[in-house]
Image (cartoon, rainbow, N blue to C red):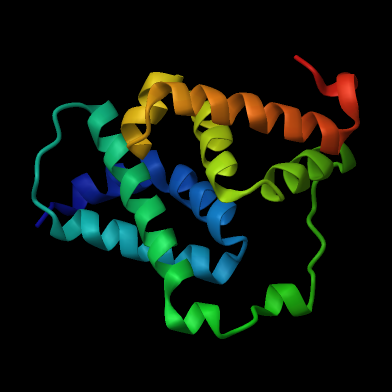
Amino acid sequence: MRSEQEVNKAIERYSDMVRRLCLIHLKNYADTEDIFQTVFLKYVLRSVSFESEEHEKAWFIRVTINACKDLIKSFFRSHTISLDEIMEQPVHLPADHREVLEAVLSLPQKYREVVYLHYFEEYTAPQIGRILGKNVNTVYTLLTRSKHMLREKLGGDEYEE
């Protein structure tokens, strides 16, 4: 079991990333908090040492994604409707940010994952391939396709880099 100091340091370092990953996959704040607790509980109980900070970060990403997938596949989740779907709560973001966020969230999951890891966590395609267990060329293809999808959803060339 890890020390309180180690756990606090990890929470400080990775909490935002874990929450963002959960929100991208689950689109639900309550489920995000549940998975957040699950991920950090696994960290507390797991006594494996990491080779580097990068290895530790990749572990958090992998465990978070797997926990989200497990929740999505669960019987309970597939037979309920979230309150968020019933009562859409307004998001407090500038209009252009909201539009981009909605466009990214509307992408199929395999595209959301690579977009998040590439643009928000600043991983390279080879790193994303290792984290997700995908071929690097597959990651490049997913990134290219997601850019085209986003460009179509957001109105063309005005959002190009």
